[in-house]
Length: 196
Figure 1 (cartoon, rainbow, N blue to C red):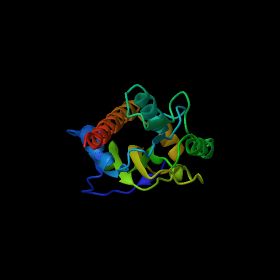
Figure 2: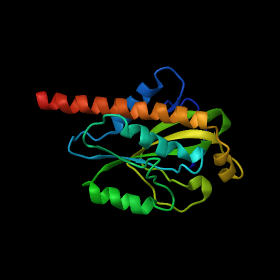
Figure 3: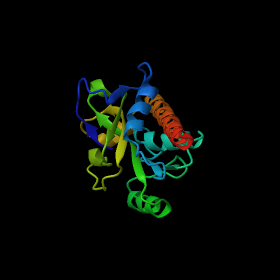
Figure 4: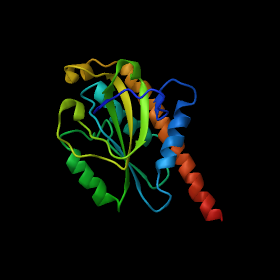
């Protein structure tokens, strides 16, 4: 969890309810995926179901398991088996044991400015989970997707506890659909290469 600054005009920030939001997420994510089809993709969904605001990652992971993803897409972090501050390092080790040199996409909730609540960001590079809560956790991912679930400020723990479940669910559904569509684009690219 981190606090994102305001980036007006930044098209990597997509409102969950804007037209074609899932498609925009898919296109941004697809552009970040490795070109090699042999590279395993680890969807590392961070958060906990014990805090409404921080449940975004596990909700996305759970929804992704209900979808048919490409065979080299692997989901870590669900409501049943979450990835959170206590087990983050252990789960990263598990990913690296299970998959040979995976491309990791981190998915997490974050706090931001009031005008950015409800936006989703898809960006290259790792994310720093737990930053808003001053937790010293490792950077995670080769790229990341974040959803701004509430406004940051004082007492982030209480802000996360008092985040609207409706917004978290809406963000989770939009992100899940975006990842699913990116998977379809990725699968089409792989099949297109096989046909050549």
